[in-house]
Length: 164
Ligand SMILES: [Zn+2]
Image 1 (cartoon, protein in one colour):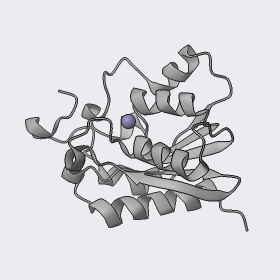
Image 2 (cartoon, rainbow, N blue to C red; image 1 turned 180 degrees about the vertical axis):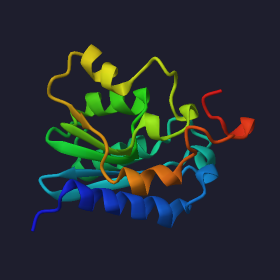
Image 3 (cartoon, helix red, strand yellow; image 1 turned 180 degrees about the horizontal axis):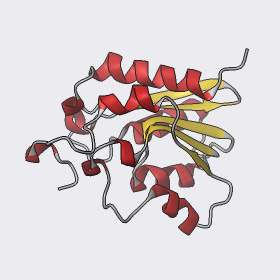
Image 4 (cartoon, rainbow, N blue to C red; image 1 turned 45 degrees about the horizontal axis):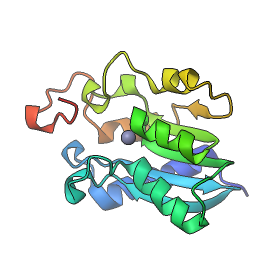
């Protein structure tokens, strides 16, 4: 039976927890690239480990997917991510030609430090890029994804606020 969004997201959550645990301080964010109902590649956030501000889970997954497919274009692919993608990852998905982005926790479910600015939304980003062939859908297994991150009202230590 073909896997549904919830099944893929469950795999993403499992990957995030297996690789990074459940402490928000370790940024347990994971992403999967799936095409034609089949797993292509995955990635987890490695910004701290690699001293690389671009090593978001989605970028790691897109890089691995490009290698796996032997092609930087991945039309028809779905990017599953446990947290709503930032502007960088949304833009990378546009360059990759990803057809759908499905995310778990949305920006209202987590602390504002996960996003560049409260006035920049990835939804607007896609709309402003005049992309009508990229769907963004949130709310898949939000209850499992959101607790992995700092909540909207959590008192996050200053040195962990990546966007500060
Ligand atoms: Zn990102």
